[in-house]
Amino acid sequence: MEALININQLNLYYGAFHALKNVTLTIPEKAITAFIGPSGCGKSTLLRTLNRMNDMIPGTRIEGGLSIGGTEIYSNEVDVETLRKKVGMVFQQPNPFPKSIYDNVAYGPRLHGITGKKQLDEIVETSLKSAALWDEVKDHLKRSAFGLSGGQQQRLCIARALAVNPSILLMDEATSALDPISTLKIEELAQELKDKYTIVMVTHNMHQAARVSNQTVFFLNGEVVEYSETEKLFSNPSDQRTEDYISGRFG
Amino acid sequence: MMTKRKEFDQGLEQLHNLIIEMGNFVEQALADAIAALKKGDLEQAKEVIANDPKLNQMEEKITETGSRLIATQQPVAKDLRRILSAFKIASDLERMGDLAVDVAKVVQRLDGQPLIKPLIDLPRMAEIVQTMTYESIQSFIQENVDLAYKMAKDDDQVDALYGQITRELYSLMMENPRNITQASLLSFVGRYLERFGDHATNIGESVVYLVTGSRPDLNV
Image 1 (cartoon, chains in turn cyan, green):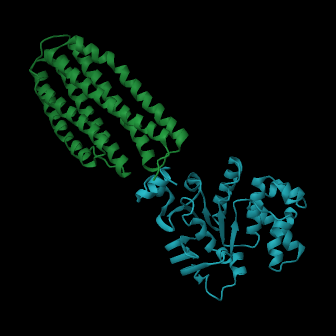
Image 2: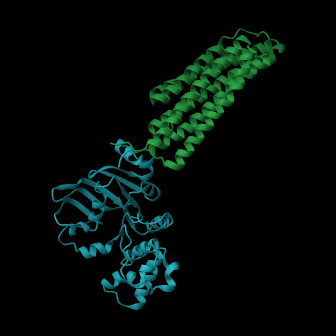
Image 3: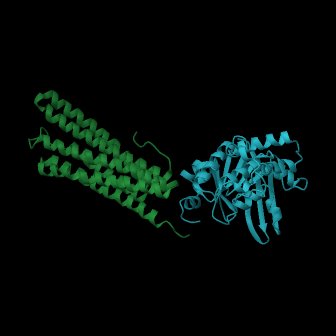
C-alpha cells in the first residue's frame, strides 16, 4: 500500500497547550486507519488537521510537515476549499442540511460549479448508492433529510461527502450517536468504501477499531504510543500502555 | 492509573486459581496411581478412578468462566490470551487426569499378582513427569518462560526412558510368552507416562503463548 498521508514531526498548540507532540505517521491509501486513545489524547485534533479544520480555532499553532499525495497542506499556496473537497469529513452527530435528500447530496457539486441536472442526478444517484442509502430513499429524494432515521442521516452525510469526489474520508466518532444496527451498517459501508477511498476514523469504541480498521494508532497525551497492524495491536501490542488501554485498565 | 475492571479481574483470578487447583489434583492423582502400581494397592487405584470426575468438573468450570468472560468482557491482547491458555491448559490437565486413571486401571487388571520384574524405570519416569507437571504449573503461576523451556527439555529423558522400558519389556515377552499380558500392561503404563509428559510440555507451550503471544513447539 502506498503512503498517501505523510505526517512528519508534527506539533500543534492550542495557545499554551501542546496538543500534538512530534507526531510522525504515514497513512496508507485505500485502507482504514483508526485513531484510538483516551479523551484529550489528540486523536481528534490530528484528524482535524488533515483537512485543516483546526484553522478555525483561534490560537492554534502548527509546526512540522503534513503532506497529502506529496503536497504540504499547510503551505500558503494550498486552497483550503480545494483541500476539503479532497478530504471529506463525517461527524459524530449526523448533520444534514435543512433541505431535501437530493439537495443535501447535490450541495457540494453545485458549490463547485456543477449545474447540469443530468449530471447532478447522476452524482446524487452514485453517491447515495456508494453510501448504501439509494434503495431506501430513491423514491422520495425530494423529501426533507430530517425525515430520515439517525443511521440514514449519517449515511446521507457520507453520500454528501462522497458527492464531491474526495480521495480521503475522515470519520470523527461517526457512529457514536447511532444504534448498533446503524453502526454495523456504517462499518460495513466503510469496508466497502476503502477500495476506493482512504479512510481515517477516530473512535472511542475500541472494538470498532478492531473490527473495521487495517491499521490502528494509539495516542496518549498528544503522542503516538503505538502504530501497527490492527490485528497485531489488539492481539499482542508492543507497548504496555497500549495493552493497559485496550484492556480497559485506564481511559 | 485506576483499575476499573473489578468483575473482569475477579473472573481471570478465578480461572488462574482453578488451573492451579487442577494442577495440584493431577500431580496427586499420578502420585497415587504410581504408588498403587508399586504396592499393587487396589483400594488406592479405585480411589484414583473415583476421584476423576472432580477434575472434569473443574475443567467445565474453567470453560464456563472463560466463555462468560469472552461473552461479557470482550477481552483483547493478554486478557484474551489468558483465557485461551486457560482453556488449553485445562484440557491438557483433564487428559493428564485420564492418564492417571489409565494407570490405576492397569493396577486393577494386574489384580495384585506378583510383578515379573521389579519396577525401577517406570517410577523414575513417573518422578520426572511429576516434576514436569509441577514445573509447568509453576511456570504458569510465575509466567516464567525460561522455566517452561527447561521443563520441556526434561521430556527428552522421559522419551529415552520410555524407549528403554519398552525394549526391556519386549525381551521379557520374547523370553516367556506367559509374560506377555503383564509386560504389555506395563508398557501401556510407559506409554501413559510418556503422554503425560507431552501434556506437561503442551502446558509449557501455553505459558509461552500467554506471555509472548507466539506459539512455539516445545514438543520436539
